[in-house]
Image (tube, rainbow, N blue to C red; front, side, top):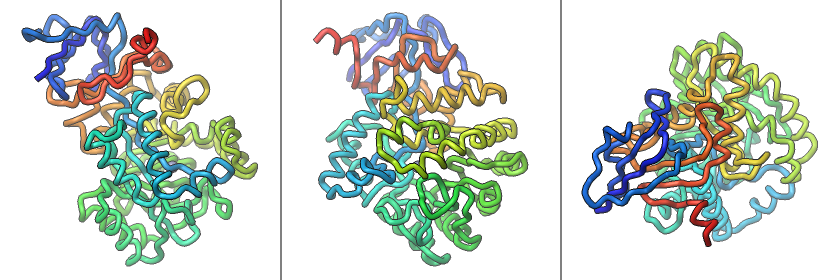
Length: 410
Ligand SMILES: [Zn+2]
């Protein structure tokens, strides 16, 4: 049994959405025993005291739209597509380690190739490779020729029976949730963002089967009309939501359907250049940016629960920070006119996604009984979420997995 007392820090209380100055956290083995104002946290005899030098401590971040095996059209994506199973597993393990070091201690994978995600999840849980806690959908389900078709991170289904079978096949492999592609998107050459792709009976079959097996369903979706039909049939979460209307946003809020806006995917020209994506995809992405931002604000105004998800690899070095932090900056900045404060954005990166996953008894908040998954930064992220650019220390399950000050001493 190891007792740690983390002190000399301010703590973001993700349940109350406030910063607790002069805070302390008592960690025993992999869990939090007590957290709050230092005067209220009892110090056990023999505890190892860790002075955090006036830093800002937060729950580890959750990124709900992750692909560790992402391959977009273009040269970089073609390299990933060409990988054999061993190469792919190592490539994804490298991404998992970098994701954890970027302060993302939990991910939700929403389409991964060839079942490698299940092997990776097991290896992380066994302590064989470093990485975040993983919740995964396995392969995404799409229609023939639909969004993402032709890659081993999707399964093409047509008709209600095939969608039922698709859901069951991923659950049988160990899927924690189900991902559907219900409309076109940015990365499909023969479709538009607004192309409807699943019929009502296909959506109903997939969603009801997943729910019967106790799995939530999220959907890649652009146009309001398609989203409305899926929400009517019980959809739990919308990815991107490029073209919402106030009416459909209100319908989502009433149904309790969340939104993972992935704002960075229409703001990442430099990333696409780096990957060598074709011109048509660049144009479609950047051309959708303004409507995408307006759609996000409609969701906020309607009271939809919004959650952090980057779509880009969570750790990717992008515009001076990670793709995860850049996405959170976009959420705060573009959402500010609709009431998105930095504290609320931090909740969208911690407790709110933990609740969606049904994991808020384990992660998303620094409270007794939860895993000691923590990140530390030098600047106050409740004043400006850009404070997360100064992230320099990461703990997962009570073990420090990154400490830049120690690294600097080497
Ligand atoms: Zn995606």
